[in-house]
Amino acid sequence: MSENIKSSLKNIFDTWAESGRYQQTIDGHLTTVNHMVNYIDLPEKSFDFLDIGCGNGWVCERVSQFDNCNSCTGIDISSGMIAKANRENKNAKTNFYNSDILEWQTDKKFDLVFIVEAAYYFPDLKEYLAKIKSLIKEDGQIVLAIHYFKENIESHDWPEKHLNNTQINLLSSTEWQKTLKEVGFKSVQAKLFKDLFSQEKWERELGGLVIKATA
Image (cartoon, rainbow, N blue to C red; front, side):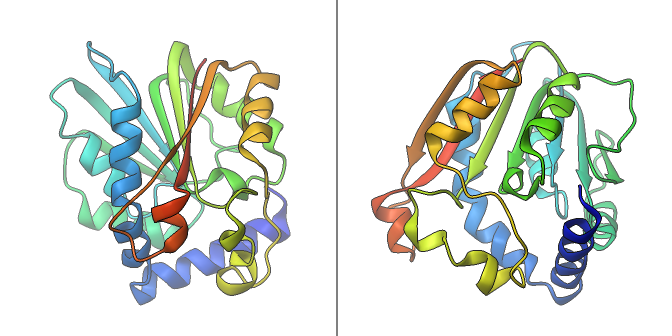
């Protein structure tokens, strides 16, 4: 991740961790994560799970409750978020790392990878997605939740409103799918999931974008 973007995002997310603001994003993403889980075929056998941009680890905690989940690994560039994850998650299946995924070194391979509202932060999408693909077992799955995308007009000012004008990637659903295919992912599919009970008009009428693919 370019140092300027990495530093800016790290500072923002560290501030969110300290202020408790991150709880608002959790509340807003609960329905999305449920859609992600329901959109895929969860592995029938024991599986290893990776959450990229894990925040305080709440998705890992949820997935770790599946009986056939062997391990849940979370990674985030925010040291503040990882500190919260380690404090708040005591399940022996969970492990958390403070790192940029591009720089993270591991020999482990994963059956299932979630990226919840984080993929658009990657400065070089193909470089990052290729690294992530290398961490997935053959025929393992990746699932991305994306609310900041071209079709969602109401999201276009989010960098200005929430991220101190940090430059992030604004792609269409088609462009996201094309990029995943270009780095070697297969069976790429996308779907919009509405939240009819959301206070946000765009979530009720358009829905959030969820993309799944296999390695």
